[in-house]
Image (tube, rainbow, N blue to C red):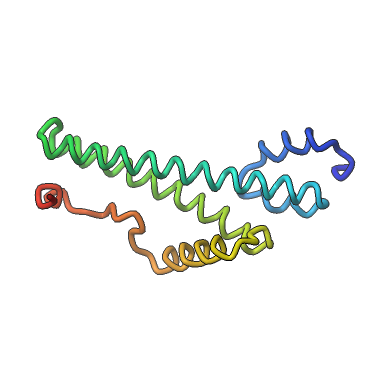
Length: 142
Protein backbone atom coordinates (compact mmCIF):
# COMPACT_ATOMS: atom_id res chain seq x y z
CA UNK A 1 0.00 0.00 0.00
CA UNK A 2 2.83 2.43 0.82
CA UNK A 3 4.25 2.07 -2.67
CA UNK A 4 1.02 3.42 -4.18
CA UNK A 5 0.86 6.75 -2.37
CA UNK A 6 1.23 9.99 -4.33
CA UNK A 7 4.64 11.63 -4.06
CA UNK A 8 3.19 14.64 -2.21
CA UNK A 9 1.87 12.36 0.55
CA UNK A 10 5.18 10.47 0.70
CA UNK A 11 6.99 13.81 1.17
CA UNK A 12 4.77 14.73 4.11
CA UNK A 13 5.12 11.33 5.74
CA UNK A 14 8.90 11.23 5.32
CA UNK A 15 9.24 14.72 6.83
CA UNK A 16 7.58 13.48 10.05
CA UNK A 17 9.64 10.30 10.48
CA UNK A 18 12.25 10.46 13.26
CA UNK A 19 15.94 10.21 12.35
CA UNK A 20 16.20 6.71 13.81
CA UNK A 21 13.54 5.32 11.46
CA UNK A 22 14.15 7.48 8.41
CA UNK A 23 16.46 5.24 6.41
CA UNK A 24 14.38 2.12 7.08
CA UNK A 25 11.42 3.49 5.11
CA UNK A 26 13.64 4.03 2.07
CA UNK A 27 13.28 0.30 1.43
CA UNK A 28 9.64 0.62 0.25
CA UNK A 29 10.46 1.52 -3.34
CA UNK A 30 12.46 3.95 -5.49
CA UNK A 31 10.15 6.93 -4.81
CA UNK A 32 10.45 6.44 -1.06
CA UNK A 33 14.23 6.01 -1.40
CA UNK A 34 14.50 9.31 -3.27
CA UNK A 35 12.28 11.15 -0.80
CA UNK A 36 14.19 9.75 2.18
CA UNK A 37 17.47 10.74 0.57
CA UNK A 38 16.23 14.31 0.04
CA UNK A 39 14.94 14.50 3.60
CA UNK A 40 18.19 13.09 5.00
CA UNK A 41 20.20 15.72 3.12
CA UNK A 42 17.85 18.40 4.41
CA UNK A 43 18.29 17.22 8.00
CA UNK A 44 22.06 17.00 7.52
CA UNK A 45 22.06 20.63 6.36
CA UNK A 46 19.72 21.71 9.18
CA UNK A 47 22.00 20.11 11.78
CA UNK A 48 25.04 21.79 10.23
CA UNK A 49 23.30 25.17 10.27
CA UNK A 50 22.20 24.76 13.89
CA UNK A 51 25.69 23.66 14.94
CA UNK A 52 27.20 26.66 13.18
CA UNK A 53 24.77 29.04 14.86
CA UNK A 54 25.52 27.62 18.28
CA UNK A 55 29.24 27.78 17.57
CA UNK A 56 28.95 31.53 16.86
CA UNK A 57 26.89 32.00 20.01
CA UNK A 58 29.66 30.32 21.99
CA UNK A 59 32.20 32.64 20.40
CA UNK A 60 30.05 35.67 21.28
CA UNK A 61 29.69 34.39 24.83
CA UNK A 62 33.47 34.22 25.10
CA UNK A 63 33.81 37.80 23.92
CA UNK A 64 31.26 38.96 26.52
CA UNK A 65 33.23 37.11 29.16
CA UNK A 66 36.49 38.72 28.03
CA UNK A 67 34.91 42.16 28.29
CA UNK A 68 33.62 41.38 31.75
CA UNK A 69 29.97 41.65 30.71
CA UNK A 70 29.14 38.31 32.35
CA UNK A 71 30.41 36.58 35.46
CA UNK A 72 32.62 33.50 35.38
CA UNK A 73 29.96 31.17 36.83
CA UNK A 74 27.36 32.33 34.31
CA UNK A 75 29.89 31.89 31.52
CA UNK A 76 30.70 28.34 32.65
CA UNK A 77 27.03 27.33 32.98
CA UNK A 78 25.96 28.76 29.63
CA UNK A 79 29.10 27.52 27.90
CA UNK A 80 28.54 23.98 29.21
CA UNK A 81 24.92 24.07 28.06
CA UNK A 82 25.95 25.19 24.58
CA UNK A 83 28.63 22.50 24.39
CA UNK A 84 26.16 19.79 25.43
CA UNK A 85 23.65 21.04 22.88
CA UNK A 86 26.21 21.14 20.08
CA UNK A 87 27.41 17.63 20.99
CA UNK A 88 23.84 16.27 20.79
CA UNK A 89 23.27 17.92 17.42
CA UNK A 90 26.62 16.63 16.16
CA UNK A 91 25.72 13.07 17.20
CA UNK A 92 22.36 13.37 15.42
CA UNK A 93 24.03 14.74 12.31
CA UNK A 94 26.65 12.00 12.29
CA UNK A 95 23.92 9.38 12.72
CA UNK A 96 22.15 10.65 9.59
CA UNK A 97 25.42 10.87 7.67
CA UNK A 98 26.45 7.34 8.61
CA UNK A 99 23.06 5.85 7.70
CA UNK A 100 23.12 7.65 4.36
CA UNK A 101 26.60 6.34 3.65
CA UNK A 102 25.75 2.76 4.63
CA UNK A 103 22.62 2.78 2.45
CA UNK A 104 24.19 4.12 -0.72
CA UNK A 105 22.63 7.57 -0.51
CA UNK A 106 25.92 9.45 -0.78
CA UNK A 107 27.18 9.47 -4.34
CA UNK A 108 29.59 12.41 -4.25
CA UNK A 109 33.16 11.32 -3.52
CA UNK A 110 33.96 14.45 -1.50
CA UNK A 111 30.85 13.98 0.67
CA UNK A 112 31.80 10.34 1.20
CA UNK A 113 35.29 11.37 2.34
CA UNK A 114 33.82 14.05 4.62
CA UNK A 115 31.52 11.53 6.25
CA UNK A 116 34.24 8.92 6.67
CA UNK A 117 36.55 11.53 8.21
CA UNK A 118 33.85 12.80 10.59
CA UNK A 119 32.96 9.27 11.64
CA UNK A 120 36.60 8.39 12.27
CA UNK A 121 36.98 11.52 14.41
CA UNK A 122 33.87 10.58 16.38
CA UNK A 123 35.12 7.05 17.00
CA UNK A 124 38.45 8.38 18.27
CA UNK A 125 36.68 10.78 20.59
CA UNK A 126 37.95 14.28 20.94
CA UNK A 127 36.53 17.71 20.39
CA UNK A 128 35.89 18.34 16.67
CA UNK A 129 34.67 21.90 17.32
CA UNK A 130 37.55 22.85 19.60
CA UNK A 131 35.19 23.77 22.42
CA UNK A 132 36.87 22.00 25.34
CA UNK A 133 38.81 24.99 26.57
CA UNK A 134 39.59 26.08 30.08
CA UNK A 135 37.91 29.25 31.25
CA UNK A 136 41.22 31.09 31.53
CA UNK A 137 42.10 30.37 27.88
CA UNK A 138 39.87 33.26 26.85
CA UNK A 139 42.28 35.73 28.40
CA UNK A 140 45.22 34.16 26.55
CA UNK A 141 43.75 34.57 23.07
CA UNK A 142 44.66 37.54 20.93
